[in-house]
Amino acid sequence: MAYGEQGKFDEAITHYQKVLQIDPNHVEAHNNLGVVYLKKGKLDEALSEYKKTLEIKPDYAKGHFNLGYIYHRKRNLEEAIAAFLRALKIQPNYAEAHYNLAAIYYEKQEFRSAIQHLDQAVKLGKNADPKFLKHLKPYR
Image (cartoon, rainbow, N blue to C red; front, side):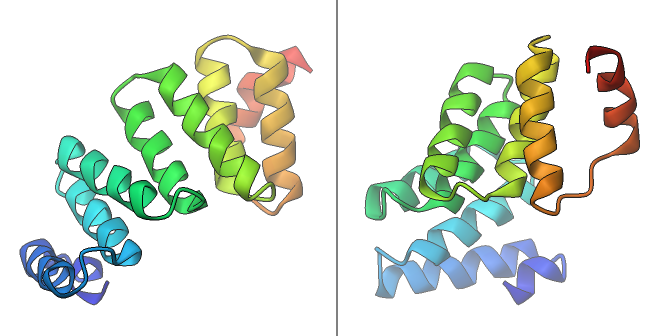
């Protein structure tokens, strides 16, 4: 994903589209194209690419995670939760999925679940935002 990392999003899009012309089932190309669309603020296009990753490879934890991330950004919290939980079912030690679930549960004021997932994320090596820890402290 060198183009995308350099901020050359249009070049990255062209590159991944060429890869997908050769191999329409290239999971990483769909995923990376979704990442570039996300960085450009094109959430619907990113969502479409992430869904394609899962059509090709339903047990792709990163695809479920990315889908959850987009749903969270779009404020569709229930869909986001479901996607993050699917990612965790496939990859139970997915620290970022636990962390994102903690954030959503905090937003929903489901503090017990937020703390559970935050603690698991930290246990798995995720550095928690100190402000987030401070906000949850009264509910421990």
